[in-house]
Length: 515
Image 1 (cartoon, rainbow, N blue to C red):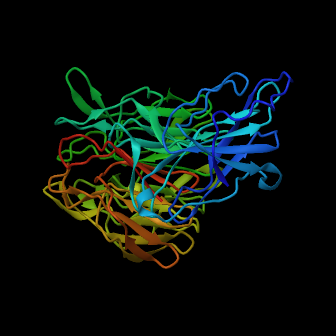
Image 2: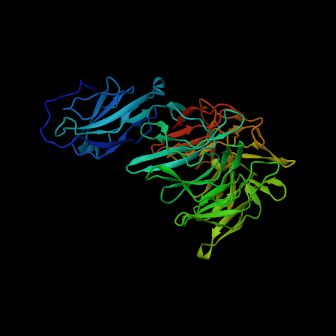
Image 3: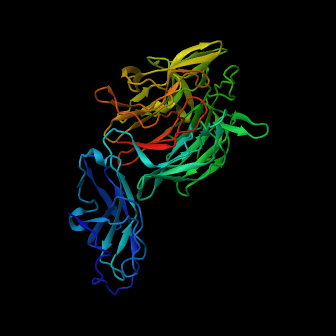
């Protein structure tokens, strides 16, 4: 039962033993959806009573030395909930959340304490946890802002005994005519839903690939950097590793060839494959690449892989449940460029020797769909959105598409799975814990090497993998494309950064969540 917290409780239970006050971890289990429950897990608790404190505003409550050795991170006039560890077993009792519209967007501060202590009344104090109450599937703005960069990389940061953190690394700032690469990053803390400055990259870069290795580290390859004198944007062969143990980015041996709009994926044996892309930024005279490079993270050595039959740009490379890699879509170059629906599978033969073999073509030609491709839990590959179109006088004229299809790697077949309610390219796709797939944002309209008549999309679409049915949800508070997104372990989709307009202008500074 909720009760008002008296001004710093009872001092008559203070003991005389001499061990120091400890700490323990507290984490959300449920995201705070209106009409649902709230629940938390905790560990590292040794005392029989746990008190869960709640406030509706951030703040600090100083504690006298006989109560605790550090302040509580709660606002004024907190409320408390007493938990009985004998029955809770590491999970708090569910707390019902009223389905009241006036609570939508409310941010609640939580912290837990255990008692009685030895030398102090409180035995230990947990970390602070924040819950944002919101209606299911309605985008809600977080009380924080990001840099608003586009073409950044989303990096998972696994942390021992804590929910995964997420890093939004690098990206481009397009407030002027050119897009300026960035070396900064921001970190999403899933407990507090706050975005704070993160580790610095060795090189300022945008439009790089991000591939997580088996050990939890992430490799960033290629992208666009800017030469200072003269100021020239150019692809890079730089390679960066994020080490989750030390929480830092470090430079690795570079690729043989600078690349942008390339594809990357991980083989079952741990090697990283990078395929295709462009070695320049000129669609009129493209240095399109058919080359493939393979990185061994153990030896940290790059070696040539089997070349593609044709140069391919802005396709997608997906690691299949069978152990093969599937290259699908993109722009193909063989003297002239053309839209591709052709697919290739990269297979490993005797001794790990790699080779490309043809795979069934997609139902639709498609490009710029790498961020809206997802490996589903059942082993199929969903591809939604992206762009289709024609190549005129060597220039790709692309139209955002709403076609969606699924690849079955066992049957080697593509199947149409309905129509996305809102055509877009450059959005992001995510799967929530209940299996629902969310397609957020993107750019709608006609596209050329740079957007010329497109409109950033504020729309959020949903797909049910069981029924193959698409639906449209409420719009985001601000449109975005070429943004980052991550799903926290309790099922909150966080959308960060991206462009707000098709041309030059400020990035999206709103961090939004969807449940």
